[in-house]
Amino acid sequence: MTPASAGIFTRLSRLTEQPQATVLVRCTGPVSAEDVTAAQLLDGCLRTADALRSTGVRRGDKAVVMTRDAYRLVAAVYALTSLGAVPVLIEPRAEVRRCLDEIAPGVFIGEPLAHVARRALGWGRGHVRTALVTGRDFPGRGRLLGRSLPLAVPDGSGPGPHVPEPRAEDLAMIAFTSGSTGQPKGVEYRYTTLAGQLGALDAVLRPEAGDVLLSCFLPFAALGPLLGLTTVAPQVDHLAPARTPPGHLVGPLLRHRADIVLGSPAILGLIAGHCARHGLTLPSVRRVLSFGAPLRPRLVELLASALPPGAEILSVYGATECLPATAIDADELRALRVQPPPDHSGTCLGRPLPGVGACVLDADATGLGEIAVAGPVVSPAYHARPDATGAAKSLTDGTLWHRTGDLGRLDDEGRLWYLGRTAHLVTGDGFTLTTEDVEAAADIASGVRRTALVGVGPAGRQRAVLCVEPERGARRDAVLDALRASLGGHHHGRRIGTVLFHPRFPTDIRHNSKIDRARLAEYASGGRR
Image 1 (tube, one colour):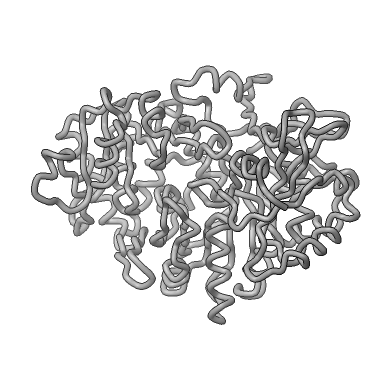
Image 2 (cartoon, rainbow, N blue to C red):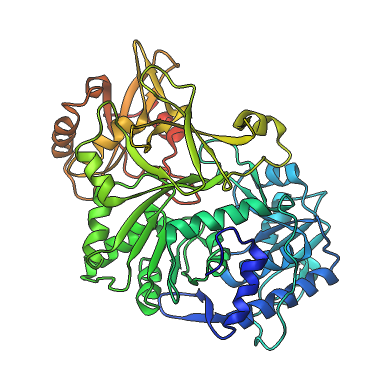
């Protein structure tokens, strides 16, 4: 086993021990896929590094990588880091131009569509000096978009890269936050940060020799091989994950007999729903990891019905700046929903992972405050954003703490409880409501797919509106009756001034799981009951 504290190149070098073992599976649909062996991946990294070096990419260069292909992403990221360059990961969105102006990347690596957007929308204009296009060539591509960087899977006959482990504090990568609760920010990962995250992931994944991981979040495909896992990357619609055809997820899962499944609640809901509709089970799966949004009981029940006895479902908490931080098993989560500790509400996030610390800052008389996380998983800064770094990072007795922007409490067992975002507090005349306190109770009502509490009006005089996304075919009067029953005994139930139905909540683009409350509040301000 690789030591938990091992860095990325130490872990990468371990792949040479089994050169013909499959380390990555790139899927192009429900059935078709290409296996990539350790020898092929290492050979590809070296060839890609040579190609990048020939174009002038050097140590310290910041390089945007924008591709939906798992192998091309992994090869480009590994090759860039082997050169000492800094990969920059960001989703295509309206704010890309502002984000790239902020970090000033000199290199842009991406598929043709990404370069079309770069040219049309001015991404990196004035900064990008080297434009490299992945994928198949076509006439005029070099003149229109940039130089070719095919990134084809090699035969594996060449050597792999031999790179000494860099200094722990060197900048390794910049990954942008999703922007679902504010402007996207570039999070700096040092090599020590990546080593800490890999160690924490070892603890939560608990991989065994020969394990197969179905990774439904593309950036994680770059970490799976470093964890010793055969990583299957299904063809997810990365611009709208919830619109992914479920067969593109379940097909590869069954075909490659995945032991571990990792995905957001939206993706896991597609898998569970497909299995329920088609009478399928997932006999090989022994562990499911949910991340990106709270895990609700109805999804747990649907997943459990497709899993074998004894399979574990975990809800993992963290953020781009500190991932992973805590985890909780669905069985414990279910028991705590039925009988929470005294004076605790919302959703339990579980205990901090080994080496990770959690505390609640600026707590009020009830223990409610802002969740902060410390440990090797915590990024040290936002790139080129000293104001944001100063607001979110604090050093106490030599320990760096990251303020998450989430509200929570710690119970007597050392478990962290989530109450919602600080920015989403609903404040009215004589009351303050946290979103998760109300929604965790409302979401269990029959006929409800999910709910969202928003405030309408100026802070301090807001009207509390509960937006409801009903299940397909649910009758509104029946849903309202179920909500009254669920919230009737809730200590803040009487504060809900309006219940407003919405056909489909707007969500974040990364996971399609975090609710866009700003847009919902705008809808509620002029909506109908």
